[in-house]
Length: 65
Image (cartoon, rainbow, N blue to C red; front, top):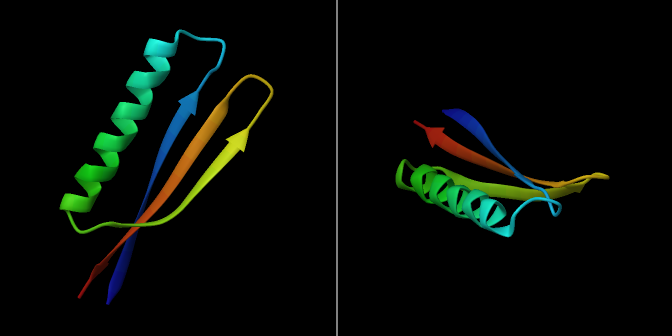
């Protein structure tokens, strides 16, 4: 059995336009759903805060028999 991993990175910048951040969050949701359609499952979600932004890192995995 082989396991494939994938990550999705989403950068949220509180200094930027809220519409742009909403688009990024919507794109993240669509990416998660797309991976789910291909058999990936969500393993973890981590939020990393920096001085100027937050990054959401989603880790997904898919087992191939």
